[in-house]
Length: 172
Image 1 (cartoon, rainbow, N blue to C red):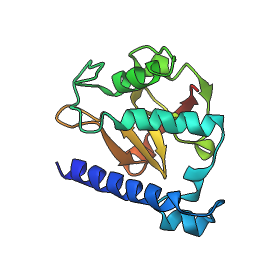
Image 2 (cartoon, rainbow, N blue to C red; image 1 turned 180 degrees about the horizontal axis):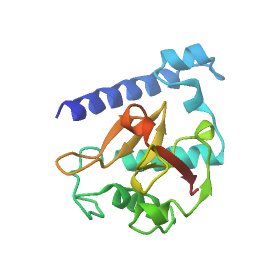
Image 3 (tube, one colour; image 1 turned 30 degrees about the vertical axis):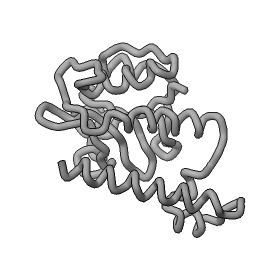
């Protein structure tokens, strides 16, 4: 519940920022964007950026949904099921298997990650068998269905996730 409360609080901050943006002169400086509750990078436009944001927005709809092994949504997801379900809404047909999801799309370097890209994690510091997948949301964070007993949530790309980062793909 604490995670859901944090997410709800962040949503309220974003909505307040959007209201402040409604009366702001454009273009915004990076400082004005930050004051409105956005990072400058999140205001970048373009077809890929807006499609990636749409993917993230769709994935966020499932925050708090329980992890279910083999779950393909919308009432329960495992990690690859969440990715498959979200991207299906954008006309991208993926399998319900992390390894084959990592074979689809276009490879993206870690330095080029943008919201909506899919990131994969592997054993042995990311060089071994791929065991987990999530959708990059920006700001070194990703949304995923972690494991039994947990829910779809946003995590930082640090600690064990940083250590086991394997690769990323862009589907749209």
